Image (cartoon, rainbow over the protein chains, first blue to last red):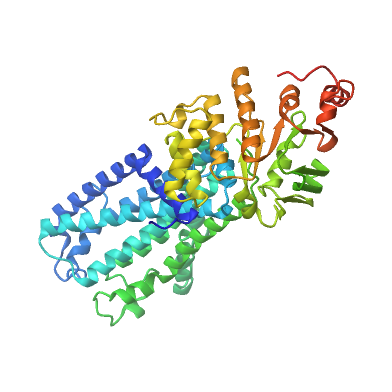
Length: 318
Length: 246
């Protein structure tokens, strides 16, 4: 006799099934799988050139699979940072408003379940789908790479890749939550999809331009002291870090390139005497800890916003 | 037969300064079919939402089966089936799959749910083993499936919000007969909201007349039948004009 499932997992199960069966998901997974295979191909053809003598990352050949590129096609990491938001938005933009428009929302919520079950289950369901998909892709890339280059990854490389997948899932979860929030706020699925894409475009295209403009306006004169120039650099970098994609890029490059020691400007004084050797995983994680915290915080804020507005929403039929 | 099952006490819901529901006192007794009659915007749906704990009242209390709907909405929703106006189903699932999903949300054992779902489909007159997805259902079929969906959790009370809108006259008649049968056989309490005077007159034991967020009058079955104090006169007195026709 199987035991009776909690309603929460019943909804999660239905959400996962809906996602996996939907055309939308099949299209998204096809786009992402194709681009990943493309980037894997360029990485494999260039992996010989990517390793230079005396490269501190040279011992991490396997990680090059994810970062190497000859400039014709972006690397795996760049693809994820570009397409990840699309995946998150695609799975979340009609989470609540489509149920409302179909008239199923009031029917489901009049069942003996807590109201937050529905929104939590929508989030968990989509997150499971995203997590499984990203993990599968990364493992596939590793598998193909293993066949092609014939060198197995070390434990350190493997754990770095797993960390990278973890960060990617958090990054996609941020966009997922944002789109769920818009799906609560806007009645039409098209409006919420547009709003999400607008935010995504803003951060991936316009935000850099705006930061550059600000940068030009406040740039220190040529006569400025080193201290002023450094603080200006730091300020600009922090401005850029408001974009989630920036945080994601910083976090993943550090994780996948063990030789990256700092994400801010370093003076000659600080570098002087440092041996150009890769950092251990623990130290790399320390370097990106603020980025990780920032990403998780942004995700949690979006979720809290959608949670609060959903709990207060009045549920009318259609 | 006479114990109260739905009790509203000074129930009020305000949106800003506008009172959608204004100090309503009402008692529905076990086993009766109570009609809520009123024009659009009379506060019928808002009152129903408060009974289910889907929206919180500004003041006053609601008790269904002796449970406070505002404080313990989950327990209330275990006992109350609600058929919203123009109910929707998951379009890519078949009728029976939709019913089973509701059953799972109510923690009903899978085997029992299967049997019950089939029985109910038969009862509401929907074809049993069809591959037809709920998205292809006509409005009338959706409404019947909605009734089956409400009944699958074995409710004590069913609340039907404008269940007959959009169904053809013959379908309406069948639907009404079904509701009466359910009351007679299972002892259900039925709350039936509508703006069709004749439907309410035909099926209900007692009727509450809603208008402008207020309960204007309560009429019982004897009065319903007598001509001069009848519901029709009452309706005309409050809302003017002839019978309400769509």
